[in-house]
Amino acid sequence: MRVVLRRLLPLLHLTRITTAFAAISNVWFVILWTREAGPELEPGTAAIWSTDLSLTSLLATSAVAAGGLFVYGMALNDVLDVQHDRAFAPRRPLPSGQLRMVWAVCLVITALMTALLGAIVLGTSALLLCMLTAGAILFFNAAGKFIPAVGLVSLGLIYAAHMMIPNFQLHFVWPVWTVMTHALVVGAWTYSLAEKRPLMSRRGVVAMIFGWAVWSCVLFTAAYRRGGIWPDWVEPAAAIGPAVLALLFVWYAMRKVRKTPSRTRAAEKLVRYGALWLALYDTAWLFGQGYWKPAAVLGIVALVGFIGMTVVRELLSLIDQPLEYRR
Image 1 (tube, helix red, strand yellow):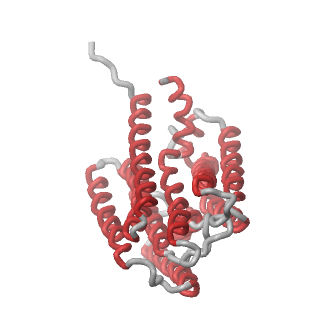
Image 2 (cartoon, helix red, strand yellow):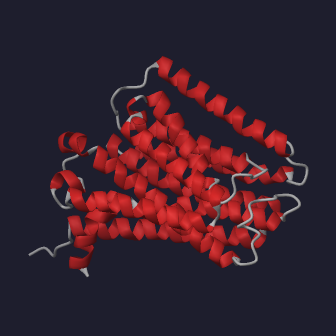
Image 3 (cartoon, helix red, strand yellow):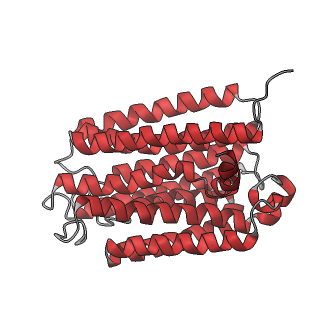
């Protein structure tokens, strides 16, 4: 078992697969929300209401698309950053030689192809949005992240576009806005904690906030044209859970950051718990609207994701630093 885990260790580090459940939860939310609301309130796409696709098939194919796109983004980041990692993160799989570059490139290509194949089943619009999101991920990793204001806004947009792959016509966009904002805040916070270069200036912070405000206006303008910024059929109480969760995240994250002496490790923890919170937001929106069964499904996804994330991390720690009996 230990030998198998050692061989899988480089891939687990490269893909950050333990946080992929958040990406899957986001696309599942859109499908479950649309199906529960009904075609009169959330018209959705032809694939969502197709009689040829059951709900299970929709969830399975969307998970393939979401998971493939997530792995593509994580692996692409390491492939393009290999020179930087050789200087600043030599223990990562590629600079340390644990994983050959050719296999990493193959993983990037395979993950992208898998995501596109999953998106095809969801329809032409899903395929086009998946391709657009993949292009945005490439832009972010190749150029955007080297300009903090541009990169962080792009990161939020990537999360928003990724979430809407199953249904780009979503009328109720507040959950998408929540995910976009959360991703931007977590990205900016971890950027500061990890002391990445170039450092973000005050002008950069203002530009980032301006970019977020512009794209928020674009999102809500599209929603207004479809049926209102906050549709009449959505319960006002649906916002209570996500709002409370946002406050809890700030408190919990600040607590974790203060207790972690290493800024780099604090940034890693922030990324992990930030991923968990995305699934919790999805659950809270469904619960607040009274969609109990879909809320339970995503609640289970969040729980399984948290357990898996914790168990895998503990196993990897034991592999890196195995326990020994004293003699």
